[in-house]
Image 1 (cartoon, rainbow, N blue to C red):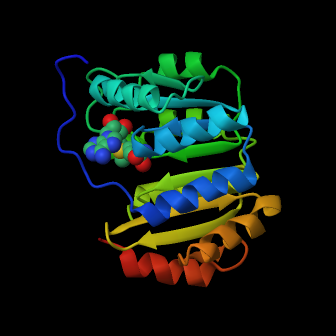
Image 2 (cartoon, rainbow, N blue to C red):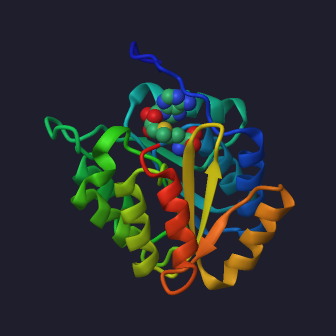
Length: 227
Ligand SMILES: C[S@@+](CC[C@H](N)C(=O)[O-])C[C@H]1O[C@@H](n2cnc3c(N)ncnc32)[C@H](O)[C@@H]1O
């Protein structure tokens, strides 16, 4: 590990959320995974990919967290999943995103069935060029997960992704203990399975599409605005 150490470690989602996440992976079996912002989630994604013979890539901004994730995966005896350290664009300011050319090199012209957006830290997720790269890589996505959609710019991006990909059905989960909202865009053929996973673990959700359920989603949005 380099001298930079993980600092300000946040509590991650609770065990029920990770159980839900694992169940979704096992039930849906996405062929390919792309994650922005690694951490605990990466250990679940990499474990899934290793055991089910799928491919995956995580882009991580911090060398310290990158090393921490790699050492977790070694401990778990999990291999074959790509975790890359890609620093933020130098001098880009508060909406700086991962180094564009490096992310583009890593992704190439691939598309991913599962795209999980949980980075970069701060305001970088507003970055329009970064959003375009994600949109391109998500064009065939059947499951898109965007964390922290209580923030308006994340919700706006999530909405626009659901409209430009097959993952058009929206499930929004409020994990109240952390004050966060997490959004799942799901393709029509996967949406019943996703609903079953939520119900199995007793987790509530608000659902709808851009064409229906809009009022429900708006009410939820109004109730969390400014959290
Ligand atoms: C929101 S976190 C990503 C969390 C990850 N997707 C997860 O669900 O575990 C965004 C960034 O914060 C750093 N990070 C990851 N886990 C962290 C934690 N538990 N506490 C503090 N920072 C974390 C990493 O640099 C990561 O890219």
